[in-house]
Amino acid sequence: MAFTALMYHSLADGRHPDALYPKYTTRRATFREHLSALVDAGFELGSFRELLESKDAGMPLPDKTCALTFDDGHRSSLDLAEVMDEFGVRGTFFLTANYCREKADFLKPEEIRVLAAEGFDFGTHGVTHRPLNALPEAEMKRELSESKTWLEEVLGIPVRTMSLPAGQGGRAVHAAAFAQGYRLIGTSREAANGSVNAPGTVNRLVVLSGHSAKDVVKIASASPAYIWKRRLRAMAIWLPKQILRTAHRTREDGR
Image 1 (cartoon, rainbow, N blue to C red):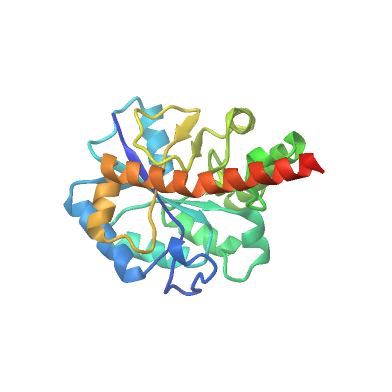
Image 2: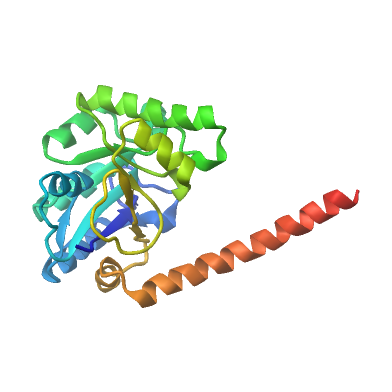
């Protein structure tokens, strides 16, 4: 059964506004409008844990299943959780260990435990948020293991899910994660998903600050027009960078 997953980050007007990445923030009122529109459109909203529970029980996912995910662990996750609670739905927070350990405006262990007791789900998002596929193998594996150990110590339960920092993964990263006991890996590939595979990856569609409730319903539906627009935009950003890198290497080789 096909399903989708949405990727949010933080609230722009939460307890600690996220001023570093404004395009990835969503206003609290807007997030409420998103959830209301998704529920009205018939979406079954849930978490990665619920995806795994359905898989392990051999149960098909409900029609129009959409997982809600939130990367990094910004402290405005508390406000996101309050809004989800209004609709009786839960989602998965993917936490960057060092952000939570070192930055004042990110979730702390007691807050994480409170949210977990309320039924919210948690997974890891690396230790330092560095792209895992750009690291030496030993360091990449340490990022996977240390973030997992830290979060398991906070929660007191096994951690089975993660999302890729900066969306950067690949076969070696996925294999190392599965070997360490992760069962689902959230990617940044914007597409719908087929049935849940565990161990396996989950494509996620990003929600940006300017997206309206109408937009989010289209995104959660994996609208082909939206996906192609995003891919063309990504290509438009990637191609000039590649040209500049090639030109730089050519100049270096000519010296």
